[in-house]
Structures are given as C-alpha cells and as structure tokens.
Image (spheres, rainbow, N blue to C red):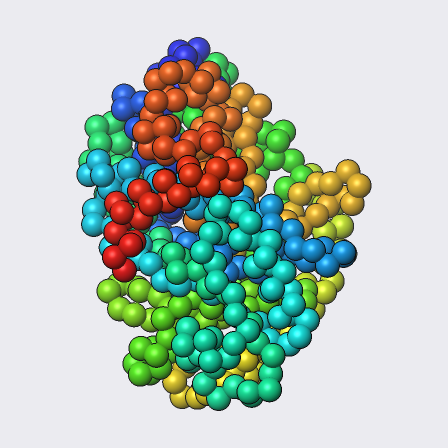
Length: 504
C-alpha cells in the first residue's frame, strides 16, 4: 500500500484515509500519519456524540500506564519455578515508546500541559502467603536484571510496606506473610483527556474532517483499489458513501462486526468474547487521602487478565479518586453503549468452529464469570478487604466500567483459542487495518500504530523522510531498550523531564 499511488477508479477519492472510532488508537494513528505526511487528507467518524466515550474514557479503564511494573500476569511462573519476564520487558518498552511520543508532541506544541493527562504515582505489587511471597521474590530478582526495571524495590518487612501503603496494612493479621515491590516512576494516565487533546490538535490541521454521530453501515472494496465506506448520520437518518484509499477500524468492541463487513480473507475465523467490568468507587475523602499508589495483586485462577485486582489511586477530571476492582462480568454487548445482540450478530460460518473450540477450552473462565456476575455486595466488600482490611461498605459505591472484547482466533492445532491481548489484522495489500482485543491496549497505542504503519505502508516507511519523522517523534525507534542501560536511562530521563514526571 502506498498513500501516494494513484487509484484506478472512475470516481475520485473523497479522502486519503478514513479512521473509524474516536478513541486513543485512531487519535494516535491520525496524528502519526499527519506528522509523516502533512498533505494527507483524513476523515474521522465516530458513532457516539462525544470523543473517547468508550474504552478510552477515564472511568472505563484502569488509567495505569501499563509498564509491567506491578501487573503480575505479565510475569508467569514456569513449571521449573523460574519467572518469565520477556512479556514484561516488551510491555515496559512499548510504554516507553508512548512516553517518548507524547513528550515529542508536548515539546512541539501539539499537546497541552502534560499534567492534564499524565502524572507520577508508585506502581506496586502486593501478595500474601508463603508461596506468593516466594514468587514475588523471584519475580523481583528476574526483573531488576533488565534496564527497564532498574530501581524496583522489594520488601517482606511489614513496617516498610506499611510506610508505602498504610491503607493495605492497616488491620492486617501481623502473622500473615506479605511481600511488595515498588517502582516510584510508575504513572497514572487519563487516556480520555489525552485522546481529546490529540483530536483537538488533529482537527486543527488542514485536510482533516471530524464527524460525531456517524455510524458505519458497510465497507466495500471497489474495482481499482478504493474502499467505499457507507455512513449513516444518526441525527438525520441520511446515508452517504465515502471513497478512500485506506481504512483503519479502531472502534473498540465495535471493530469485529465492521471487520467482518470488509470481507477480507484475513478477517476469516476471528470471533469475540465480551467481558464487562465494575469498580468499587470510594466515597470517603479521608480514605482516599490515605492511599497514594497503584497496588496490583494476583488474579484468581481462571480469571481474565483484565480482572487482576488493584487498589488504585486515580486523578480524574481534576479530582483524586480511589477505585478497587475490576469485578468481571459477562454481557453480550460489544460496547458499553452497544446492543445485547452484538455477540450473536458477530457469529458467522467462518468463525463458528473457533468460537466453539475456544468455548470448550475455557470452561473455568465461564464459571469464573458466572460467579462474578452472581456476587453479592457483601462478597465484593470481602474481596476488597483482602487489600484493605478496614474497608466499610458505606464508604464504597459500585460503578460500571468499560466493556472489552477478547480475541478468539483460528488455531490449526486447537481449532480456536481465546487470547487476552491485542491483535492487528491487515489486508494483504495494507489498504485496511483493524485493531481487536484489549489489555494492555491504550498504554501501547504508539507501539501498535508504529507497527501498523510499517505493515501497511512498507515502501514509504522505509524512506529516509519517514524514518526521520519516526526518530524525531520516538528517539529510540528501532533500538531495543532492554538491551541498553544507557539508552534506556537516557530516553526515560528525557521523557520524564518533558512530561514533568520527575516533579510529581
């Protein structure tokens, strides 16, 4: 795919690029493409009447700058007892790319004051029980060998842990073995605010159009190579067709149905498994003020990674908040503001087999989700008390979080597998791309979009002009940070200075 190659078609193109969905992924890709080629015309369409209202909204995601500092599901313990850190290294590096990108945009005046969307807060892991303490000890020893985890502290001393997180230790049985790790350079990110700022900048650029309340009804590849996108204006009910050379589907849970409409062979066999979430939100200002960290624990056996419990200090709309969760659930909706028919409409002849096989192999997950849905308020408070022993029911209120659609894909050996991650699907010619899946999602948006651009536009991405832009926006582009302590320290220090993270 080349964004400058003429399209052989009887009708002229309406725009070079169509971005579907007004979330962090489309915002990141739109800004990146405009930086790479300022002459590009870009049209953005969103079904809702506001930006970042689904997965990117601050109340619908964890707000954690996912860098594997505290998320134990990224460091599994192997049968021989060792801890695997390759995924943690990858995710930590991906988040460093995001910080570099945001720092460059702040420096160049593309983004506003960084305090509007990112701040420093300690990232901590906390476990109890002898087996878990030993696991955390091994995890710490493995991670600190990597440049990306330099400075991580580990302790089994209740007194020190109480200094770090008094809320978690207050009222805890002193005979209970406990352990914690701490990374002071962790971050809290308001992805809703960041997304809105990226779109505010993008909408000011020449050749960019942005429309809310627009539902994509169909996608068709036309003779000559152009894509025809059918769009319905939800306010007027009128429909129209837009012709473009490249389409990106970044519609969160709404991506799979649109990908299926494209009829590209690469989309065959993909399915989706929706998982909903809820938070307990603290209402007591004294309790909120007493905690200043993101504290992650170990997920229950059979639970999805997005359900890893955490006691989470947040900064949302200028207010300090304290959340615990998420509590997982099941809904047939693919979006928080979607339809209960979403799951059933996504089932096609090409993905029935993967769906059935994946379902058969994930019975424990199904039982776990049913158990979560059936939880009483008292059971939710009991789960909270494992992290905050002194929790009082009257101090907490249940809130609905975001909806996630986990990827189900074909597998030659197993028929179908359920994956907890993100999956980029592109056509053979690179003219259409879609992002499926969830965690770690928003935190790795920059890395995902850099890869997508190189996959869809390989000729242009290899040019000196585009390589110069890549390195301008992401100074460590193409250089593994896990293999160089000096480079990792250098880019991390620069990003922290520009984003004002060292002052928090």
